[in-house]
Amino acid sequence: QKEVEQNSGPLSVPEGAIASLNCTYSDRVSQSFFWYRQYSGKSPELIMSIYSNGDKEDGRFTAQLNKASQYVSLLIRDSQPSDSATYLCAVFKAAGNKLTFGGGTRVLVKP
Amino acid sequence: DTAVSQTPKYLVTQMGNDKSIKCEQNLGHDTMYWYKQDSKKFLKIMFSYNNKELIINETVPNRFSPKSPDKAHLNLHINSLELGDSAVYFCASGPTTGTGSKNIQYFGAGTRLSVL
Image (cartoon, rainbow over all chains, first blue to last red; front, side, top):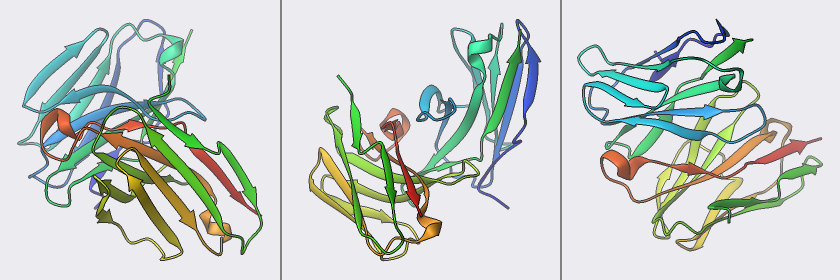
């Protein structure tokens, strides 16, 4: 079992719809959770961080964390063509002191 | 003013050669990282330095040797390059090791290495 798992996609959504991305992680002691966006040929860019159970909203993005289920998600509201990218889920745990990335979900927003 | 900068952006070289990639951050962070992203886009940590001290050394061939002359710089030297080393190498930096926002990492633009 991979430490951090994501559906590779592509997740195709029409412009203006909600894109829903999921991520599961295997280690219960994981502490911090991040979503990075990576455009093709570019570097990962942090878009959301979440540290406690519940929802966290920032603009059109909402991150949701459920530690009991070892599940973190990202919602993108009012999806725009510029949201087309690969979204990487990343999980930090103090043991090992490192950030582990999932394989990424490719999102395609169609006009 | 770029926060995490890497050079070169592209590196094309022959098998067996030795090459170096340089990274500098001006964010005042204590911790720097090297990641490798392969053709399947999987991003995996290779090394981490905290204030010039090596703290993470993943299962990486010893042909790869990181060096941190100070906490703002982390270089990666690769000896005897192999075809399988072709990938994008990202440098990243973060405030410090710890919890919460201290684990946020900021990435450089990447170095695309092609070994022929």
